[in-house]
Length: 255
Image: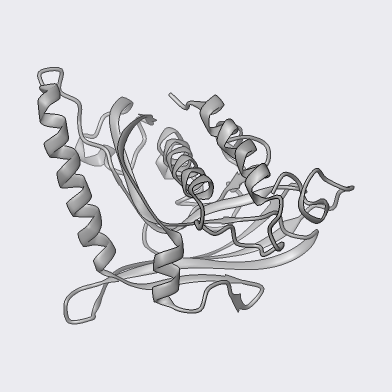
């Protein structure tokens, strides 16, 4: 179940931490508070993605018509979740409320093991260690990352994108999986899962100015020879609503 109070507290803490920043649109993980914020938002993103019916979710959306689905299940009214794809490229259109930050993965992974009541608690540390090793390996195969806003890259290159945006949540958290999920065809059952993990490259953007913006996000994994084995790409045309002065940066809400 989503610990909304913890997440909302982290968001409120971010207001204080970011209050003296330079208005750069990308929130950097350069302080413990923003690192914790990214961790909390990554958990919230996975919970949001898992609880929605996968076949008709923002991840599988081909137009953007589902971009507002389940936003009330996220971290609160000031953060809007965007999705990549389960593979391949897509173009979407999405209306964003005024004064609203954006959070999304460029490329990410979830580990959601089946729960067996006979599992012993002493087995969990070994499994967590395996998760950490798997995440490290998967990160090492990331050969491309894309994050552009209005035609301009927000970070210089792959190395900088990797360093700035990588998040690994290796402490287990709980999430609810929809009966219609990415592995339901293989017998994966919906329900509450007590051991969920995620890693990947996530980005948090401060609220954008009113009007139209183009956001490009994505990534790819390659084999040892450099051949692409999997890739994802989403291009969003975002229409941000206008609004009066907000409570934070330049009148754009809490960030």
